[in-house]
Amino acid sequence: MKKLVISLFLFLMIAVPQYNVFSQQGDLADKLETELARTDEIIERANEIVQTSNSSTARLALEYAIKLQNNSKGEFRMGQGHYKNSLELTIRARVRAQEAINAARHTSQSESVTLRKLEKAEELLDRVNQALTENPDNSVAGVYRSARDNLDKAWELYRSNQMQGSLKLADQVERTLLKLIKMANQLNNDAKNYDHRSEILREALERAAELTNECDSENALRLLEQAREKYRNAESMASETKYQAALKNLQLAREFTSRATSLCQNTEALERRYQHLKEQTDQLAEQIGRGRESANNLLNQIRKQLELTRQNLDENNSESATAAIKAAQLSYDQLKRTLENSNP
Image (cartoon, rainbow, N blue to C red; front, top):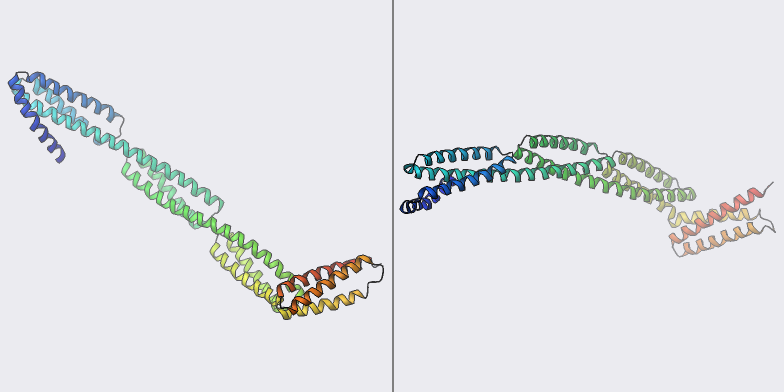
């Protein structure tokens, strides 16, 4: 209203002197008709814009502009003594019509902004739903349902032409969904990380099982069983999408596995495995007669691997000694099966 008064004052400062000029020139009626026609054009343009808008403010401003313009025309028809009032009224009508145009355009822009916000929220909602389908999470699902309900309410406000309320609620939903997407991405990363580490641990458990079976250490067997228990706990937690807790159990399982492996890979344990396998090989060699080429080839392979094991043990190279005695054990098992199958 303050802007309207200022605008009207400034216009009258220009228009009233013009009115005096008009009077002096004797063509005031023609000039006033021109002003009235100009206002009619602005009101007509405002009417076109307001009709496509849902702005109640714009409609009220337009209605008041039409009323002022009708009053202005009435003053004009009453003769020269009313021309000044007519001019003031048409100027006010013109200002009101412009206000109607501005309000309608603002509403259209607000509708466009709100619609884009709602559509973006819908896209985010679909992304969260897809993420939850791939990795269900009850804690996230509850927040998702709340966001979905709020978005439905935002659409209802939009259809009721309550743009401000709709925009505010849609913006709130968008922020919530962006947080959920971040959580879902983190959950997906945790799932991939867990699967990768779990696969590595499974392989480590298999290798540890082979070592503990061969090195005959009760402590190693006990540690391996503890590792398996922690691994089962990790798998259970991962199935409930509790990946952080699952990863902690995987770490414990890895530590137990490493300790079990170390017991069977230390020099003392490897020395015992070497002596035991050497004795078994000597016993088996007594059963091999001449002319059994394949059996003798396997026996030679075992003895070469045992020599390599001895050499690595003397050099304190436990890793190479472990690999060598494992190869010797495989050849020994193969030789033993060959002899068993050849016996009647």
